[in-house]
Image (cartoon, rainbow, N blue to C red; front, side, top):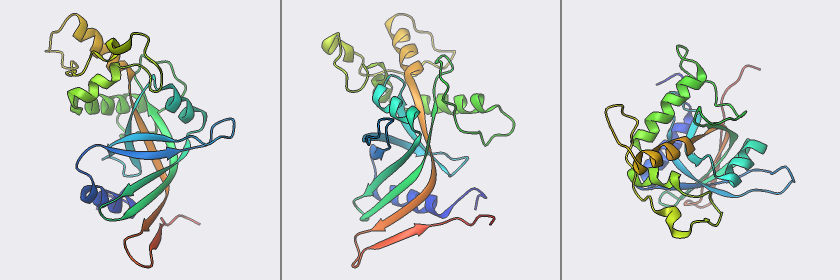
Length: 219
């Protein structure tokens, strides 16, 4: 067992495998600066393999609503429902954003678990790897207008429906495809959630079970 592996992460990964074979959206909420609660559906991508405390979601830099809510208050809660196994995971923690080095932001990524590489460089490597592994349709979504906004160019704003990765230096492509790729890749962010507390609720049994998962700490 990896020294970083924690019980809640193993349970969550097992539940994920049993319940999901396609795209997963998780409900997220936090408190905005004005005191109102936010509510977002965020797309889950993967578990961070080098550090089991982190969950990896996808986000567009131009998603002004989600981006703004996370930057104003990175502390948030997630609700992840598993319908097949009749479980609900309530996760409390903190968000970090891994954006393109070309974007000016004061919101840093989490500390890297790789001691041989600077934090920014380490997470940029992960961002590039995730981008290359995405489907062509998912990459194309990062060329689209900001979420929740009416596109100024109408249907033309969604003309890009598939986009190949062009990070490989051996791939030569000019014109609109290259421009679309640069725009999309710069807009592509990793939304990293560091889990601090987990409540697992099993509603398939009677009476329902609520489990608190705890880690030992130095008193």
